[in-house]
Length: 201
Length: 220
Image 1 (cartoon, chains in turn blue, yellow):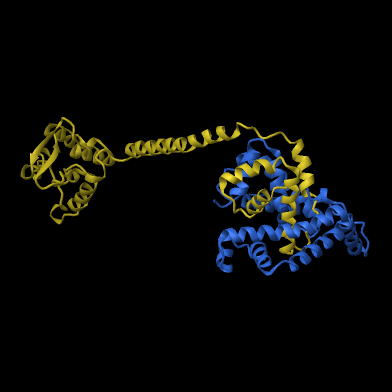
Image 2 (image 1 turned 120 degrees about the vertical axis):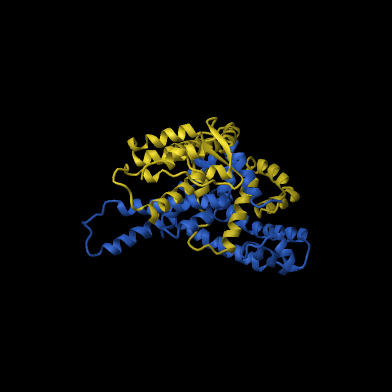
């Protein structure tokens, strides 16, 4: 087992012309990248646009990626540069001087309007959060501990095994079962609830 | 869905799957829409547990990127071998450039430096000032040519054996030294002193200490 083997195997496939493998990389990192970009821009819609641009830049630059660093580290740098450039070009854009004394308020409203262009999305986000959190709460103690140590603390299976005093295989099984239990609830939301499963795919 | 496959997918998502299995599953993941959707939900679960604030969990980034990448040209399948071949040449080219620069530097330095080299230039330089500053020679006859007292045969560099220039050649240079500028004269003398060409003769340490006849008979 090698570090970053997952990403590297997907990257190699993309480099060989398999575009579908790039989808998997984007699915894995889109939330992380949007969160990263939001350090530079506050508007979630703008952050998504920048993240999208970063992914496209990464795809185009992928033939030059040699795997010297982790894929996410490489992607991280591209996203940071894209976000910085976006902020600079936005700051250089012409300023409209015909804004009256309520400018701040109107600008803020515009920002909110842009954010609220998908109000259902925000509702869905809240619903997803509540469903996932409820599903985690409902998990047996050992499954919940394993998934939380993995996702929240970022521990490896070996470290979790040491912490929980169990074999690595058991950790793998517990994390998988925890994910399956949460995913079952999540699918109900996407398929039966708001029917937006395709937006994740 | 096969439970073993899902279990592998979960391990792969955590980067805890063996490389060989990873390769196989990556191939399937890139083609299987259902597997890909599950993979995407695993990412949602992870983002939710990490409570990534401000992130819309139904982010459409993936779908939009997928559409855009679909319109991009497919990355060339042959790009990897060509790149690795180019990579093989990089250090070789770098080494060749470095060697070239080093060779040019050495040649340039040799052209700039006196022919005698650093090893003999230092003793010669050490001898000349002491000779000039010698109090016994400060009183020089008016008829003596300027700078004639600078022509000094340096002491032997090695104790046992030493290399000195051919006597005739040294005498010639010393005799005509009044017509050459001091710097050129010094360089020429250094060259003779250290020359290892056929025109030089090896003498014992004792005889090497004796200066050439012309130099000794130089009027002061």
